[in-house]
Image (cartoon, rainbow, N blue to C red; front, side):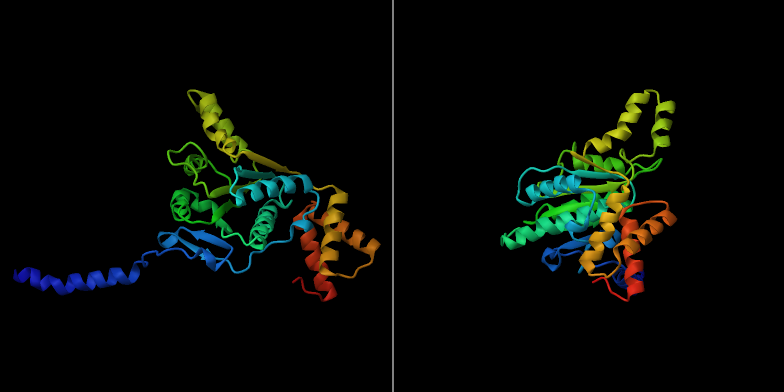
Length: 292
């Protein structure tokens, strides 16, 4: 008995220290705090509100009109409580894949707000390295009256990475499946989310090569929408530049603007929406203008 009594102060100090270093238990999530959140898997998982989403208006995304209309219509149907598909936006870098997701969310969410709908459309960003915790994230969302687009930018998987199996189960095929109020949008430079050498290696070393490849490639099949993005033509690139110039009220000579924009693209070896935006930032800086 005396030994137990002697240990009590030590045990109390240990318990007190553990309470100080342990994160507090997560309470109910206040999704009314913002229109967008970032899912953080650290500290047991929490949603970090984003006060201002970094995005551009849908009308400024040039050269992807058909693709934009498809994703926007899919997003509108989902926001209205109708059936909609998970979407994979794949293809050329800097051509507006992530910008389109954020713009479609703003457009469809704004329409819900104007209609004074009690349901809100909320964007949840999950980082690539946290994909394995996606089921934990969705557990917080499924009981909400709101509708959620879970968005992963630059999604891809490398050799020995098995977290893609968690995503497959969530998208389709698991016992519980995807919650009815959640849609998953992802962007990637790879159509099948796996590097070609990884797929080829599976084919060459597996006992049944076709089954092994199918296991890897079938992840992209879980997305009902495949939206491809390709490098911009010169005309599309200049359209992007002109749209930004008009939107932000930048004063520039038409011929000089085109010449400088094309030279900017040549020095970077690419024509894309990202390159056009970088040129506009340089132009605005030289003109002493802000891009608010």
